[in-house]
Length: 267
Image (spheres, rainbow, N blue to C red):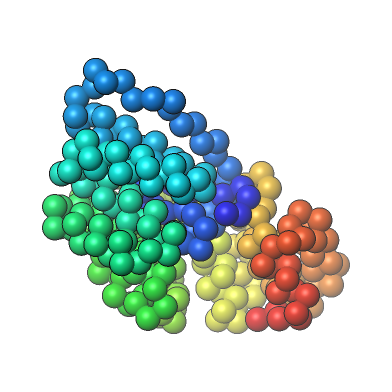
């Protein structure tokens, strides 16, 4: 998992940040994992806490422990929906897609209108090469739910997935909606809008949006730096391009982004 990223992970909002399933966000957040779950807790509380521990290990990339904790949560309370949703994401990261599908189907059967489950399932579908369009309705189920506490995340996910499906108009609409909430997710929405502008050839807009991102974070990740390199390259700003490339080389020499640069692929 790339450094300096967080994916808005909480007990009620497991928005997916791990390995190939993670859309890089922007700010580092320490993962604090409880050492044990008191036996005095109710069944529901123990399932919830084990699910929280699973999601935190998942965020940290320790998939074996994350899976173990999710299994415990489900064994503790077989009706606890978020435990299935969490385990599904873990299975997806492990590339056991049959198990992931089964857990998502179980979660959706238990709570077909749960916005967190819908958001997670939508993101899972979005990662499948041939299913980005199928994912959008699940994000819509989330951000249209008046009780959903983080609709901005569902809007960002919908925008990212629409971009993957080459629906650039839809992607822009969703990402601009995410910005209206003015939350910590704003830098990620700006980054996705910068990427979208770059793909559409709006290099000045892309540069302006990426500068907003850079002002909001402490240290850029490889994705941000590489996008900046490509923008400045397209605009012909050699000094800025060289500066950003030097940072990419120094901070992330083994990243996919730097390897792409070595191949000379600026598009």
